[in-house]
Picture 1 (cartoon, one colour):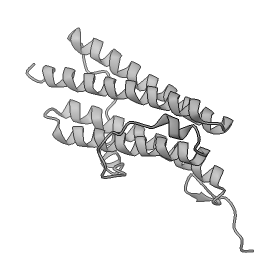
Picture 2 (tube, rainbow, N blue to C red; picture 1 turned 45 degrees about the vertical axis):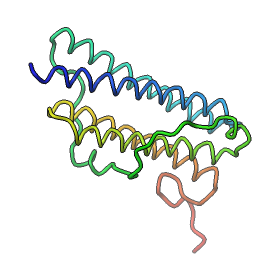
Picture 3 (spheres, rainbow, N blue to C red; picture 1 turned 30 degrees about the vertical axis):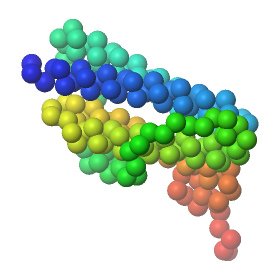
Amino acid sequence: MNQLPEIIAAVHVAINREKDAIKTYLSLAKASKDTKARTVLICIASDEVGHMEKLENHLTSLLQGKAWILPKSDLASAVGAAITPSMTFEKVDFGALAKADEVKVLEVALDAEHKANQYYLDLAGKAQSPEVKEMFLALAKEETVHAKILQAEIDSIGQTGFWCDMQEFSMEK
């Protein structure tokens, strides 16, 4: 029972982080002129709403003295999901983004995912209980999925010949 305060505090931190992510993605979608990029950003904001709802349901369960309800993450793949050493959350200058191209808007979103991933990995590393560690590792893994989606969209707009880390075409016969 001595782990409960850490768990409750950790879930509150994660809920607040998800709320910030929702606001950021909706603002980025509003700044985006490209329909496809806007759709990707809105879908990721929707995913963040889903994360927040899972965390809120989990918090309710914990406060009622019920069992842990969040799924356990795969430790090895979540730890391998660390994608940037940066940990600072910077405020996005939406005024400047209004004049930016779609790739720049998506790169801002991608950077936010990298930072969120590292943030959750750092919180997992500081966690005292295995349950809290697992929760943060699972959230880090979900942010990695978002980063891959955003990178695929950037590659698609930039016509790099790659999509989801796979070469779409070859110039060789």
